[in-house]
Image 1 (cartoon, rainbow, N blue to C red):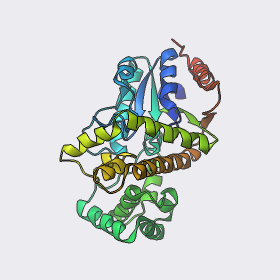
Image 2: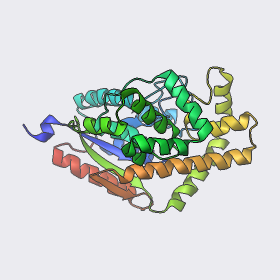
Image 3: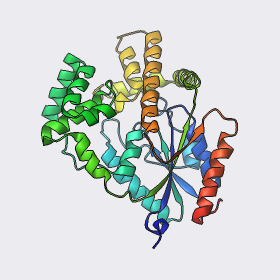
Image 4: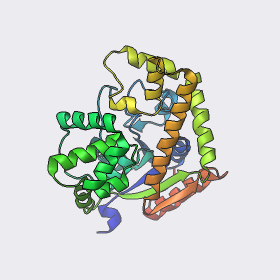
Length: 321
């Protein structure tokens, strides 16, 4: 039995925020027998449409995306749950004779899909609250230094300004007595169930991406982003501690509506947070192995990327539409 028979092929279209991944995924869908799966920790939430740059209802009707609008913003979503949901969707798509096309920028989800997840303890609310309080008091860079003392491997992989992941790594180490990086290393030894054709779309010029990020946030404001956040605040059951409200732009808009700062400061902070997100995404992307990179600014980007996918699928015995 060949490797292709044992492990089917899926396409992963990755890249930083605002790089144009959705347009490329739609172009692929139009010529390749594939079905899209969103790899985005914010698109899972209903009612968070403008600030997440969610595809329009018209586009979603024409090109359905799985794992979009599957949760209420009051709920939490994890890399482990994503992996379960994505693998189930991939099996359904393959059973129908199509190729799964996973598209997005939540790199932790891509990593979990490919490498699996360690058997980690469930969250401990008391310990998590204790770590969160320490992080607020001491600052997350200080918590990152503490993590480096007990788990250098995890600290090297986590940005000092990524409180959610620092908190989880410290929590796991406290609960198990073992470094998170050791547990994850053991999980990586398992063979992934799919072969992944990894395509990265990213610009060489950060200035180009920064300009797109600023322009896109301006468009979100024009489309009513503040009204969207006001509706979420008015529900009464959401707060800035909710995972959904950690999405870039939402926290800054919420704080602006709370009167913490004016609109100009809100825009500056939201754009800066989005740029920081893109920087973290680049850090993850540079660690991807066996990925083909495409320059996001090239004029023939769509043709080049689609052509490569068609060529690879032809080698697998799958033809374009």
